[in-house]
Amino acid sequence: MRSGLVALVGRPNVGKSTLVNRLVGEKVSITSIRPQTTRSVIRGVVNAGDGSWQMVLLDTPGLHKPKAELGTRLNRLVYGSLAEADVICFVIDATQPVGPGDRLIASRVAEANAEVVLAVNKVDRAAHNQVIPQLVKASDWDFAAYVPISALKGDGTDALAAELSSRLPEGPALFPPDMSSDQSEQTLIAEIIREKFLAHLRDELPHSLHVRLTAMEDEGNVVRISADLLVERDSQKGIVIGKGGEMLGEAGSEARAELEAMLATRLHLDLRVKVEPDWQRRPDMLDRLGFE
Image (cartoon, rainbow, N blue to C red):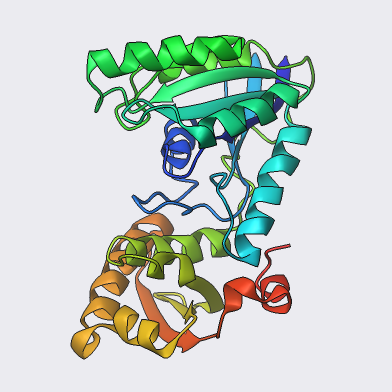
C-alpha cells in the first residue's frame, strides 16, 4: 500500500481546515471566518475504501507576518510540516487574487523535498472568470497538479484526494484504519469551545482568546467540563462575557450542544474568563500553554 504525510499549507482563511474535515469525513479541526484559527498541526487520517492507501493530513496554521511570539511559533510549525511532508497540498482562494503571501508560500514549497499539488478552493463562491485566471497564474509555479475544488460543497475533493494519494510513497499504514485523528478528545473539546466564541467576536480579540481545559469528570449520567477562557486585557474580559453574561451564555450553549452530540451524553459546562496579560508575547506562558 501507499502511505504518508500530506501537509496542507496556505495563507490564513483559505479553507484548509474545512478541506481536512471534508477529506477525513468528520470534524477533526475547527473552522472560522477569522484568520489564524488553527494554532497547531492537526493530523487527520484518510483511508482508501479498498485499503490501498492512507493519507495523514497535516492541517497547519496559515502562514502570515507575525505580530507576536505566538505568530512566530505558528510559522515555525508550518515550516516544520513542510520539511517532514511526503506530499504538499498548497491551497489558494479562488475568490482572492494571487498576492505576495501566496507567492512567498509558493517559493517555500518549491524548496521542499516533496511534490506539490495546488488546490484552488472556494470555486463555489467564485465566478468562472475568477477561477481560470487563478489557474493560469498558478501554472507559472510548475507544480505537479492543479485542482479546482470547493471544500465546503465537496466539489473536486475526490479528484484532489486521488492526486495526493497517487504521490504517496510505498509503506505501511501510519495509523489504525478506525482512527481519524491523533488529536486528544480534551484538545478537540477546548477547540470547539473556542470556535463558538470566534463566531461572535470581532476585530483583534479572536487572536487574544485561548481556551484551556481545567477539568473533565464523567459522573455517569453527565460529564462535567470546566475551562478557562484566557484573554489579554480586562476590557477583553468584558467583551467575552457580554452584557449581563449574554455572550458567555450564548456561545457556551452552542458549545455545549455540539459537545453533547459528539460525546453522546449530557454535559455540564463551566466556563470562566481570566486575564493573562500579553500571553501571546510571553515565551514562558506560551510554553505552559503548549505552544512549543
